[in-house]
Length: 375
Ligand SMILES: Cc1ncc(COP(=O)(O)O)c(C=O)c1O
Image (tube, rainbow, N blue to C red; front, top):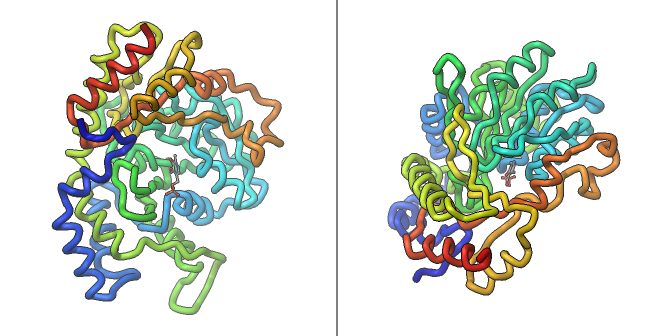
């Protein structure tokens, strides 16, 4: 049996190696390393794929969030509502600008931000909501947009984990996640569903004025060369990464299909196993399975199970073991809120290997090894 990896980038690369290697050499020979034609072409192709009017590539998904908030003119003291059960980057981008992250609880089934909790957290200082499409499934964007419109708030979708997922509105209209709010952001970290071979990120918007601001912010606040109208940052996707992403974008739908097939195989394997809840599939969103996250009954010894998996050379992970409000850096201002769902999820979730390159014997072995521990 092939070695089991949390994410098998080796096998994925081997299938596109010839094309990727040739493209890298081509970019090296062109020396158009920064803002070269590959970047422009990638932005255009991603725009078409997502159905967004504008795409701006940048250096990583954390920068994308920061650039988004700077482009929207958010100021120190403004409150930004986001999920407590997410990767730290979401809150970090808010806090680093002197904005106040206001963390709220999640739904127990799909793990995404709870819209009723967002409504309760809105104050006169609230300026934006950052829903995170966790593990590959869309948040309830219709309700979130309605709330944002009612209170005149911006919505920045953190789409780092859900690129290619599709949200269905109540009238049947569909849109790719990241294209519904004022700005969508993503990460091309190598293990992401659309990952490059280094760092990368992007912002999407349908609003031309916001797009112009994003361009300025990401390029030192520059309106034309050496004229700086606002304080910005330097956040660029390099041409080699863009060239790799152009190749991988053409495979994105088949990568999602492979993840979906792997998830369905796991679901079937665990269907009759007591104490395990397989990932919930929402009606209003497709699931692109960035992660395959089980919920374990509290009676199950999660550490023991992980140890048993490790002994059998099966990697696993916990996304996320500590809620943001209990992280040292973020603990101070959040203490008066309660997060029963987040706390329980942090104690009970377990992510199994998930990627595009499974062989059936690997998944059979993972399923049987989990079952053996629970017997
Ligand atoms: C939800 C979420 N937001 C933001 C990021 C940050 O992306 P990057 O690592 O490219 O900065 C990540 C990356 O893991 C993420 O999962």
